[in-house]
Amino acid sequence: MPVAELLPAFPDAWRAATRHPFLMAVRDGTVDPAQFDTWLTQDALFVADLLRFQARLLGRAPRAAQAVLAAGCVALVDELAWFEEQAAHRGLDLHTAPLPATAAYGELLERLDRADVPTALIALWTIERTYLDAWSAALPGAPAYREFVEHWTVPGFAGYVTGLEAAADAAGGDGAGVFAEVVAAEIAFWDTAVEAGR
Ligand code: HMH
Image (cartoon, rainbow, N blue to C red; front, side, top):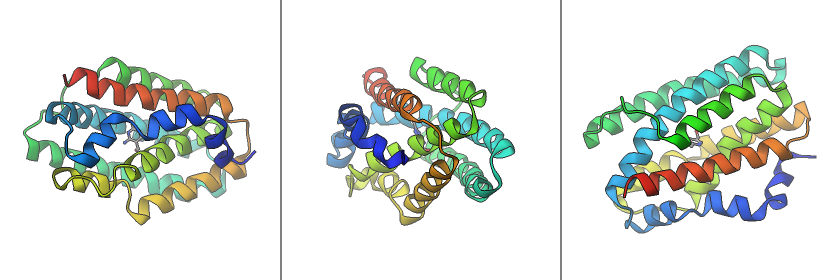
C-alpha cells in the first residue's frame, strides 16, 4: 500500500501530531518563549540523532534511494549549523541533556537501524512528512517565529518529502506499525516541549 494511504488510516494520531497546540501557538504568536526554546534545543539533539540514522540507512539503501538519502544527509548537516546559529541568536546552550521524549525518539531511531530497509524508509518519510504538515499548519507564523515556519514549509523541503515518499513506495514494505510508532514519538516530542517549558 502506498505510504500516503497511512495518513487517513490513522486520522486521530495524524491530527494530534500535525495540529498540535504548540504549533497553533507558534502560528498565533502566543507560544511561551521558554517552551519554544525547549523545543529548539531538543530538536537540535534530535537532528543529530536523525543524521546518524540516515547516514547508516544510506549505506544499506537500494541504488534508487541513494540520491534522495544523500541529499538529505547534506541538508541535515546544514540544518545543524542553522540550529547553532538560531541557538546563539537566542542565547541558548545546545549542550543540554535530552529530555525523555528526545531520548526515546533517539532509541527508536537506533532500533530502526536493525529494521529492514523498507521499514526504515517508511519511518524516515513519516518523520519528515509529519514535520512538513505540522509546520504547514502554523503558516504563515507569527513574525517572531516566521523564519522557523518557513524553514519547514519551503518548496525544497516539500520536494524532499515527495522524494522520500517515492523511495519508500518503491521499496514496498508494510508500514502501518512503524508509521504509528513514529507519529506517537512526534506527538510526545511536542508534548514535552510544552510541559518542560512550563
Ligand atoms: C521531532 N521530527 C522532529 N524534528 C525534526 N527536525 C523533524 C522531524 C524533521 O527533520
